[in-house]
Figure 1 (cartoon, rainbow, N blue to C red):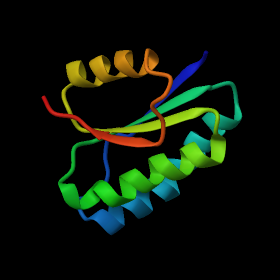
Figure 2: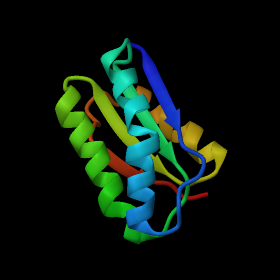
Figure 3: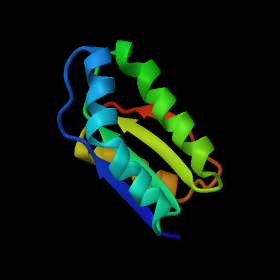
Length: 105
């Protein structure tokens, strides 16, 4: 099972601007990974306040639905250790898809 990761380092502070920037600059890369050999894609986004949660959930949900049975999840924030721990967890949890998972340090 091929696992792909898409790390996005910077997004605007405002939720609508961040969603637009993600869709314009990164969505194509996610779709390309899923149309290719990836069976699982985890999108890693920078930390954000909770007013970004809705668009992040929508990205996870809509990509997971479109590309099922492939798995798509979105991680938000967290330390590198937290990200790596969640990636390891997701590798062993085949039933988890379409989720936005905000991380903490």
